Image 1: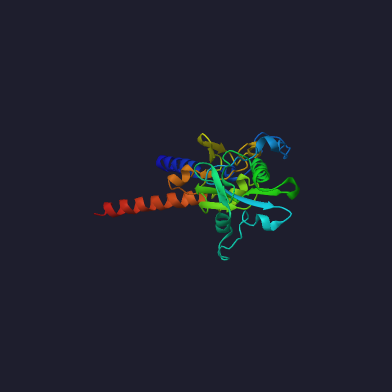
Image 2: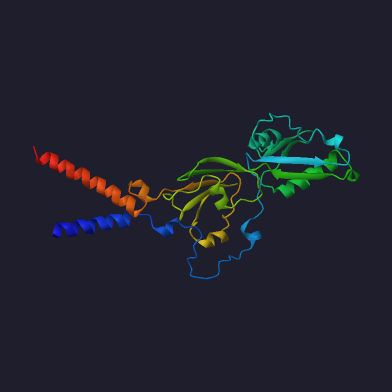
Length: 266
């Protein structure tokens, strides 16, 4: 009887410790007990203007009154029509090289490293006015990032490098496009590895907390790496739920019992 009690206690401890708690699987929980589900924040503080980095691809369009005069600046888009949007952006765009330069016809190498797209627009417009056109040409320059490219890996549905053609992408949209985080992924400690001029830094986000929307890393940036850690339950191979854990334990006990019976008959 005592052995049975000990076995029940042991199995209960294993089940409790091996199951993934329900609260660890839910996004955006209100952990401070407030009934207000609106998160006030200053968007200008959270999302500072992005500054161009090495390997970024810029989409540049130049317009004047006489468009024939700017054909050399604008790509003609003669790539394979069957190419993906990302491939077309790569061939039509201007890639920032290791020195922080892009090569624009006639204007030659043009350093854009560390500048915002708005600043680059002004720089190109001014250079065109200085070297090619007059004020009366009414120059209009548009500079955009050719897609927001990031990498997602670890415990996630579809790891890989993804390009989204949007101005702003938050962490939930980025993860949804990477196949979602399975039950065995750690939503409390999602790492965002971000590039800075001085190197890379790692930031942690708790996606189960509604206050993650206040984080300066809630919106991802080009070249971010999102890494999702596996929970310890996956590492030790136990079930994701109580039923799965019981099934695993029952299988182990059955194997042990069968082994004991086989050896005891010899």
